[in-house]
Image 1 (cartoon, helix red, strand yellow):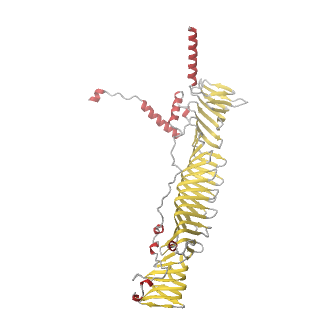
Image 2 (cartoon, rainbow, N blue to C red):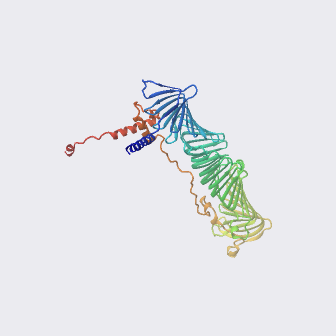
Image 3 (tube, one colour):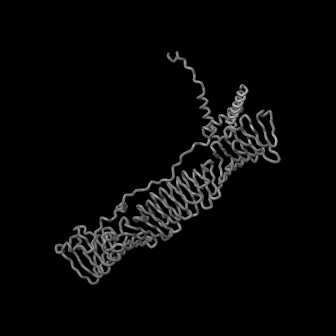
Length: 601
């Protein structure tokens, strides 16, 4: 019974000893070497290993394999230096080569120097020095590095970090991505090697043969060449600049779209389009824009504004055409207009105000949509209106109203209305002011005739083949031509119900008198909330407190004044650690004794 008890006790002790040993951190193991040398001057626990003629030294530690031509192993510190043709492998995911590596089995931090190449399945990183933290599974450099990925191109940066578990690179400072089709510059780039997705933070540009993109926060898919950009984003191409709160770009389709607070500038034609949703097709030289769409033709003296539910600008830079659909309006300081649709040819200077053909002429809504133009005190309506401008002089040249032409101006004294109607109207401009009007075919007139003292002579109601009206120094000179039939009636003998022609429609309340008036009929604007790209959130530092604590553990076993595990830290990190260690030492110092009696005195 006693022997049996002793036997069980020995087994328990052995099991306990084995369990305790297995929980200890694994030490570096020299699996293979050619020969080993110990130098008593260096220390009893320091061994130099040299390769054989057949194979390199093979080192193993907790999931990594390392090969080199020469190695120095510090047994007490569990620290190794590897020299010449160093190869470090971690499973099938990471392969690193360099001229020199030092590695601590306690901190699990490797420092590689000299022609460092880190290869993972999707990319190859090269740099001068590299830190590899196996605990966090991250690599870090700040001596300028280059990453090559076949489908995405080459990425260089001054500082970089690789997150092995996420297959993610974070490039910082002077980041440059060079692709056969474009070049990307940014302050910070988060790049996922498996998907080719990249996230830009800070001022960033993507420059291609025919486009340039700028943003301060953006996403770009390097595999499919599509991107999403926000925060001060803009795209320049084909002499157009597109600005918006959110931009989408498809390089393969030569397509871009924008959302919220959009401005599209045509630098050749000196025109601007605004709105809150736009689509740009580069191959078709077209821009589609809606949601408070506004087209501006910039001129030296007076710009022209066109607004509609939808705007479309098409054509090559030398021949742009603007089309405005549904409840279109235009405004200029001395002229405004309204129609269902407006068609403006910037090369010829022809602007057409077009009626809706699908509405019946008896439909009250259709009548309200009939094209109308206002110039100073004159209102002109008809089935369609053509406004011709002198493109070189940037001045109005002439006006044509086709079918059911109707000219109305209000008599400023008595409140009546001067009216001329006919089949067609042709007006001429000088210095952007209407100075001559011809009403052609079936012309009729109701006109308040006054003398040079503005006293009313009578009301002229007549018909003729043609009517000419000239505007001179505030006066209107009316001439009836061919087949004149009519007379001037005293005001008292001219009945009220005869003072307006059939089809009379005074539309002054519709007249845009400012840019803001162009939007008076629009429903309340509700802009979508831009989502999809979060702001940059700083991550923990590579050289963090946990790493410093591991270095402290290594220092406890290091007999030298200099801790080998932290001797090759970057200078800024060394300074930080020295400051941190100094604070820790001060906190560990014993507090001075206080004399109680002196304190009471």
